[in-house]
Amino acid sequence: MKHLTRREFGALVAGGPALASAAVFARTEGSFDEGGLPESIAGYVLSPRDREEAAGFLASYRTMAAAVAAVPLDDETPPAACGGSAAPARPRGAG
Amino acid sequence: MNPDERVLSSLQEAGRALRRGAPGASRLTDLALSRSERADRLLRAFATLTGERARAQALQSGDELANGLDRGPLHGIPCAVKDLFAVQGTPWRCGSAVYRDRVAAVEAAAVRKLREAGAVLVGTTSMTELAGGPPDATITGACRTPWDTARWSGGSSSGSAAAVAAGAVPFALGTETWGSIMTPASFCGVTGLRPSFGRVSRAGVMTVSWSMDKVGVLARSARDCATVLAAIAGRDPADPATVEGTVRVVFTRSAERARALRVGFVRENYERWGDPEVGAAFAQARATLAAAGVPPVEAAIPPYPYEAIAETILAAEQSASFEGIVRDGRIGDVLDPARRGQILGGFAIGAAEYLRAQRVRTLMVRDFARLFERFDLLLGSSTLAPAPRVEATLREIFPGGNQIEAAENLLGLPAVSVPCGFTRGGLPVGMKIVGPHLGDADALHLAHFYQSITSWHRHMPEGW
Image (cartoon, rainbow over all chains, first blue to last red):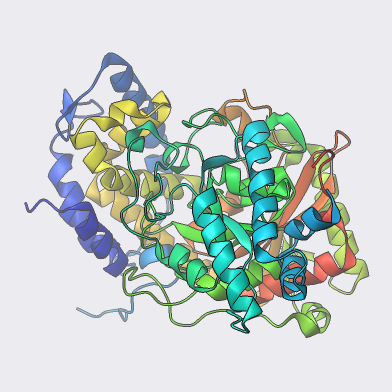
């Protein structure tokens, strides 16, 4: 997986978050076990306090993720364009 | 405030005074610097004062105006920008020890536009660290509202609102990702404009969330906000999210235009989430508008878990944005432990989860488009409670409610926060006027109309 710089990520988000998130977040997903935290994140070694705070954030995030997961979506719904101002143009049924 | 100083509380008045030559640009800047030093000492409103630069700019502006070169309504006007805008040669710390030694080598696009319009920059304003966190999570110390210096000015555009409220500058730039203009505008009793997503370039501005960050304005009135917006809006290749064109609002027929608007309002549970006095001020503001021929009708916003969607997107993008400081260990300099946990924990948000939130955001776009077929504008409370004490925790300040605030920021909607009253304890209360994406002009028209029939925005805190 190519490592993106912040500038590259910003440009990709502006052009379409799907591409950016797939490129960046897939790289980190494997680092986390079920609800747990690795020893380090992006090379930064977590202190006990940071581990506690990150775990606290993730616990509340899991509740939020469940709320997002409960919203019904059909297969045709694409990610929002940057800023949420307009959905990307993709007619229903397009390949 | 003496008569010379009073012109600092209005961009329009300051502009007229400059063209009369009394006070001149240099005198006006000296007054602004003097009041800014006081606002910094008593409120902690500034990160850096740029006196030398300001005096040089003022001298140039005065010469240009005297020689008939008029750059427009911002020419010679003192102003300030939040500490996350790059101002070349000036500390660029974003309220954080992470960047304690950084000096900007570049100039933010919005700062460049202000400079080209002749505005005189007196300093950068204080903010909560990295544009988030509780009142005291900042290297400059908690910023206070001049209405009660034991209370917070709001965040994250803390100093921009406090500086305007204190009459130090007629306007200041701020930014909003999720509440960072509406909140300080409300707590400080000033007018705040959060333009549509994409209206103003974010080049040279610290990123929290690429898909939610917006540059905006804190000023005394909607008219002043519109004047600044006209100068800084427009397409910028350095920020691919920007849209073509600017917004030039002519207010001569605001009343007529306002009365033709279909205005909805969002009802909140102030007893549970805020302060009933804020709800009462909002109800009175609606009654005032109704009596003036603009009757707001209750609107039901589509049911979505807005805060969960916003938190997912913001946290994931924030972790990506701050990956550099995680990699080199400077994340350890972030003062607020909860923020460190949020940034670090955000790396665990999976690609599929982030994308699901973005797909739900698409449904929100669709449903709000339908809502805005019935309403031209929506009204709400800018905050559900007045300014809290500076010791308050984020959970105490924002216990919940105000779901539309997350929706507005996810959808990139423009909003204007206008002062609409005071609590019995003398704290200002704000009402926000929200438009559809790129509907900035209508929101400004209604805000101006409201300010033409009320005087809340003209109140100054005692002693300032």
